[in-house]
Amino acid sequence: MKLIVAIALFVAVAAALPVEQEPAKILRSEFDQQPDGAYVYSFETDNGIIRNENGEVKQALDEENKPHDVVVVRGSYTYTNPEGKQETITYFADETGFHAEGDSIPKAQ
Image (cartoon, rainbow, N blue to C red; front, top):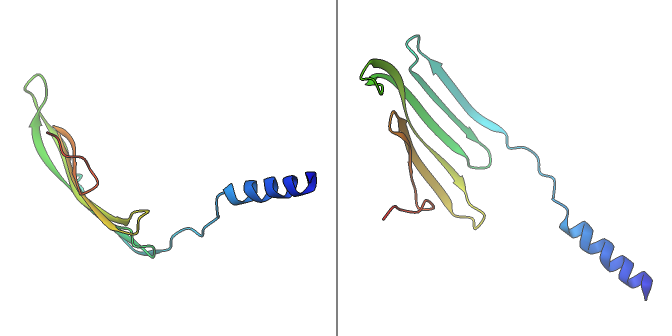
């Protein structure tokens, strides 16, 4: 009986260990940096992850109303969630903060 319990315990522990997966392969990757700080960045992997992003430099006012350059970032990424559904998140970040939208992100009310 002790042997059966020990075997069952061993099988349970082995089943709980994470399964090693090969890292995703990069199918496409592009990055173009401009001297002023603007950029375009994108990549795609063989497991369906896609990311596109660009940054543009603009002037904004700081807390003392002094102008300074900020990089405004806009982009999106797509992935397959654990339920097998493809999710796309779009976002932008500027002097007001990071803002993201997508079906899996709760909406402010």
